Image 1 (cartoon, rainbow, N blue to C red):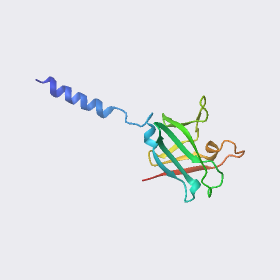
Image 2 (spheres, one colour; image 1 turned 135 degrees about the vertical axis):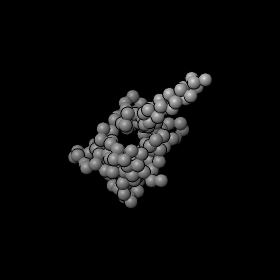
Image 3 (cartoon, rainbow, N blue to C red; image 1 turned 30 degrees about the horizontal axis):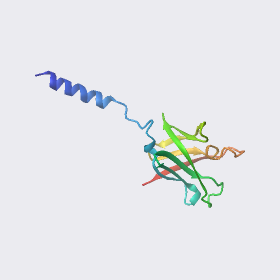
Length: 127
């Protein structure tokens, strides 16, 4: 008779002690993320045909919204994009300012062909 309440208490303690994070949950990023008011200031994370897709501006001009779509993976608070069928590229500057609400990303991660190191940009999720 005493076993059931003890078991329930132990289960509750273990459940509360478990780490609750979003590692490996690509859906955690789904949505629209912006850094400004121009069309090229928008990033989009979505599901397209059963794949996790990261859409970002392909143009260096924030006024022009020509986008590129790449498969992505989110694991251990790191963001990876698949540049080719064989190669996955970590966006090494990806860091959370407020987890789930805003993150920073360096311009060179989105535009690796840039020759100068750009400042970090802060993207905020649009509800």
